[in-house]
Image (cartoon, rainbow, N blue to C red; front, side):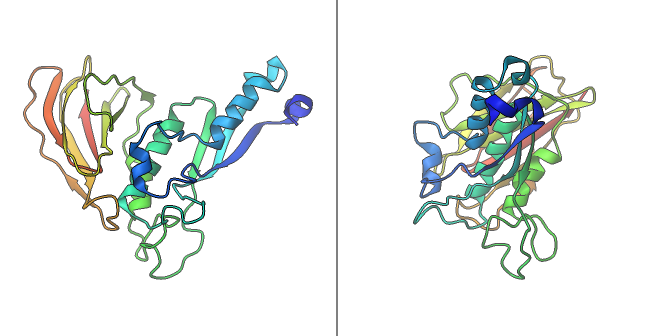
Length: 247
């Protein structure tokens, strides 16, 4: 319908379940890199190819539901654990870098079955409204995301360490993700023009990707090595470390 009706369309909506056929968390660590955009990427490619030129720049994509569920036969169990949380967090990070994705919504808390929240990634909230692993994956973006995303360059870091960053007039945030299951990683942060003032840090981590009760705790940072350098920082396996600073 895009070649014929693009002028009548405001945006395309898609559901993104990008873990089909993974079977386990280990697929996240193997080459080739999984395409976390899933059907959102297919929608963007369709916008680039099919409608008339004037509508290609206007049309946007809305991800009306997403989660790291594997719908394939005998797929990755959809337990509400740290491994799924890491993939969900990275999925939202990938979507945030696409300016033509206007919104992305976690599929969560649709059926409120008492006692089931730890068993299924579709629950962002527990019975007492505390955040589950799935909910924390979204909260780490919602609490700390600032108005501008920043470019992150990796120099010699392990293949399964990822970084994200954002900033505004009040301060900045860096998220460091260690996807590895068995190996902690040491990293140093070269912050460029970001000031090192009033630093705070927290970490989501646990006992491997199958942990259904990951910990969210404050982290003590080492003293800065220079005016624009932090580290070395040890990133535990299967963890997200969040560092914030003020201008």
